[in-house]
Image 1 (cartoon, one colour):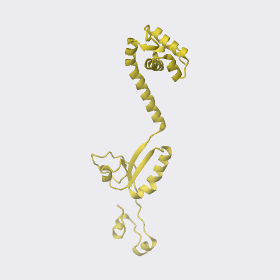
Image 2 (cartoon, one colour):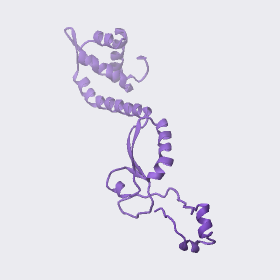
Image 3 (cartoon, one colour):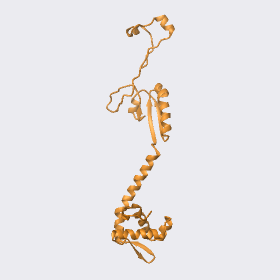
Length: 200
C-alpha cells in the first residue's frame, strides 16, 4: 500500500519517485508499475508535504526534478542499492550452500567410511560437489591437491591445521593353520617370534 504514515522513510516510495524523475511522467510510471495515476500523484504530494519542499515541477508536458529532489536522490539511492544487495544475499543463503570440495583420505578408509558419508551429505546439500583422491600422505594436502584430508598423524607441521578425529585400532589376526603350526602367542612379547604382515 502506498498510503501510510512516514512516507519519507519508505525506500519504495523514493524508488517510484526516481522512476518518475527518469520518465518525466507519472502516467507512464503508473502504467509500468501497474498502479493508479492518482496513487502516484498522492504519493508525490505526500512526500512534498511531509518534507516541506517541492520535488517535481512541470515544464510543458514533462515533469522535472527540482534541485532538492536531485540532491536527495544522490543521498538516498545508494541506500536503496545497499538494501537490494542485502536482500539478494539473503536469497542466495536460502538456496543453500554450493561449491566444490577437494577431499583426500586413505584409500581403504575412503571407500568404506568416507564415500557413504559424502553421499549422505550430498542429499542434504546437492549443490556441493566433491573431488575425492585416495592418498594416505598429507603431502598431497600440503601440495594443494585437496582442501581437506584424513590421514594418519599427527604430522606436526606448521603449515597444517590438524584436528584429531578418531583412533585406529589394529587387531592381530592369524589363520587356524598358522596357529596350529607356530603356536598361539600368550603375550605381545611373543609376537616377535612370529611371521606376519604389518600394515603401516
